[in-house]
Length: 287
Image (cartoon, rainbow, N blue to C red; front, top):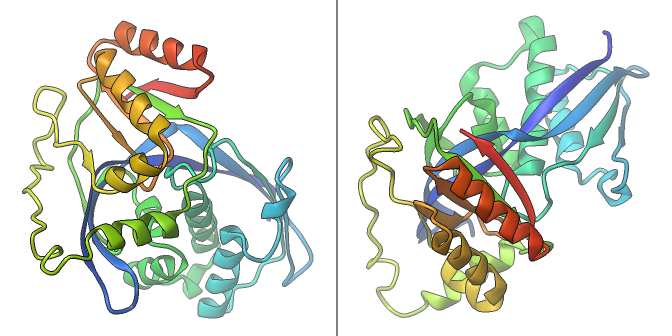
């Protein structure tokens, strides 16, 4: 096996509804994932001693332990198939951590894809691979797909979505703030503790086959209510995106990143510049 570089893109949630609390402690979700191909982590994978796995993450030594999803993906695939190639992996982080952009999940999926390509007759079938990915994390199965997807359950029930946002400019604001996902869901649960609160939730139908810049999808995120209350600066960033001319804006995942979709690229770039002048890190790309 020769050295190879894997690409692990970010994602945004164009739409996120929390539709129920499960008996296993997870939440039922209805969400629409969209890849952000221009913002990626990379994994340099080189051959190592048989059966051994080594992970380096320059600048982030705290990510080099066995809790990293890249190692957990390698271990889980080995246990499921018996394939245990020796690997040296250098993970270069570009996706902000704790931003609701799925960086860790995407890293895990990139490793699963790589192992799957090496497995030959031991390769898992598609359903088994998705099931293994879901055990690693709710967002991991999405990154095994190649485009937008509507997701239900904890995120593992995926349906490809023919969402066409081509021509829109994405402005992705990544403030220097970490929002803990488990905390966000606990806070949401507490806010919905009144009797019948869960039953009152309704999810609008999404036309994921005909969505386009002319007929946009509803952009919303249920977790904004509790996250914005704890972190008012995030509400202000969303208001700035909308005030600057975004056709739609929302928080991604449990935050802290927020995105705006702009029909006019020049307007979007002006909004990005204004955020950068406020000290907010920004990624922009035309979809």
